[in-house]
Structures are given as structure tokens and as C-alpha cells.
Amino acid sequence: MIEISDSPIDTAELQRSLINPAAGGYCAFEGWVRNENEGHVVERLEYEAYKPLAITEGEKVLAEARAKFPYLDARCVHRVGLLEIGECAVWIGVASAHRDEAFKACRYIIDEIKVRLPIWKKEHYANGDSGWVNCERCAQHGIAD
Image 1 (cartoon, helix red, strand yellow):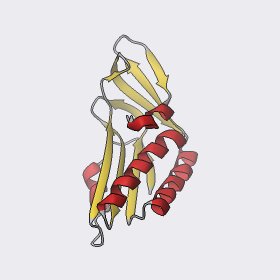
Image 2: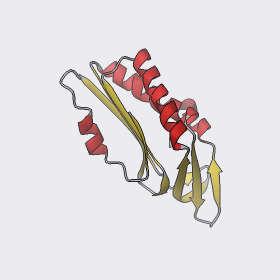
Image 3: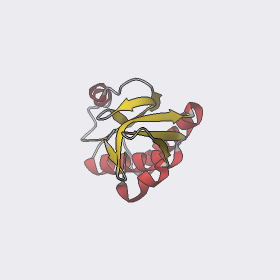
Image 4: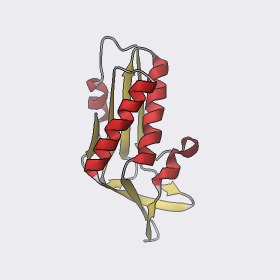
């Protein structure tokens, strides 16, 4: 299940939604808004998405991850709108019978959604400027927002 939301991400509730007596492993990733990027002081971020395509493509990513790294259940939520420093921008959780599948599926999901989903990030800088950031490069070499 993938969700694009303009509400704060409730990570505890999402984790609880993955509880399964067959699960021996659980892995989660939280991407937080940080206050610096490439030498710029960042005050906040703004995300926009084309929701219908983001959901469709996100479901494909989850299906691919399940085929590659069989897991029991997974969830992914990405925020849109204005986010402040420290807020959770993206959350992925995976429950599986064994930890290895959970780790690998979680990594695959975050890397693929950063490249494939139509979600755009605008950084608002302390000096009053702002700029759209190409998130495709965030998936390279494990760099994540």
C-alpha cells in the first residue's frame, strides 16, 4: 500500500499496521527534512506530486520489491505540502518472515520511489531564495532525503 498525504506521518500507527504473527523481521526508513543541502541553509521544504501516477507507479514498485524479496506486508507514505525542519517526509515499512528480505525490500522501495514517482521537492532557503531539487539523484549511492 502506498499513500501520498498532506497530513503528518504517524510512524507508530504505520508500524502497528504491519504487525503479523508470521513476521520475524521488520525494517523501516524515515526520511526527515534537514536544515542544509549542498551548502545552502534550508528553512523548509515543499513537496508536490501527481497523485494518480504516483500511486500507480508506487504500487508497481511495491509489487517488484515483493517479487524480488518476498515480504509479508509493506507500506509507503510520502508527504506533500509544506514541511518544516525535522518533519518526516517519507516513511517505508516492511514486515517479512526474515530480516534480510525486510532490509532489502525497504532499500529497494525507497531507492525506486525516489527515481520513479512524480514527486517534486522545492527547498526554501534562509537567504529568501528557493529552488526545485531533482530527487532522482537522491537514490544514487544511498543518498536519501
